[in-house]
Length: 195
Image 1: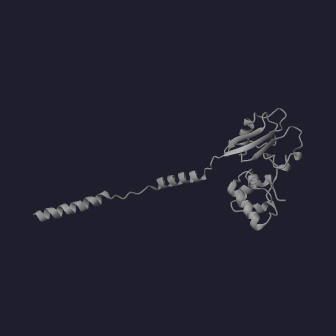
Image 2: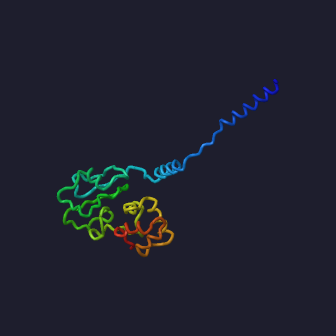
């Protein structure tokens, strides 16, 4: 009887230890939700500080600290807004800021072509300011990142392609760069040239 009792006790311990191991599965919806949250975290750009030099027809020209999530309009507002003589028709107020960016706001009637190259970084199209076109054969990373849809990684891809394959013969050659498709190119077309 004692042996049967001991055997029963041992078997009960084995059975109870098996009961504690429970396998659970995560529903597919939760997996997809977790994956999308991770993807969002990876895709969200970091909000880092940038220094922007605002010059020309604003109330308080100077160097201002903003972030990469701020836009041209934010820099202009920090500089006190436009003076009455400001010519704002060339300005792309929605453009994101990049570090060391120079925003030159011309006065009405001012000849934009006399402004040093690279300072009119906010022209909306080449009909208004041909001097603001960015030469994809000579532009550095900071100039390339002023283009719509071009961040630091795509700017580096453009520079790397240029170094490995030589100068772009036409602006259409930009589509040969990894990460620049037809849609991105269409957004860039009016802001670039290949000299």
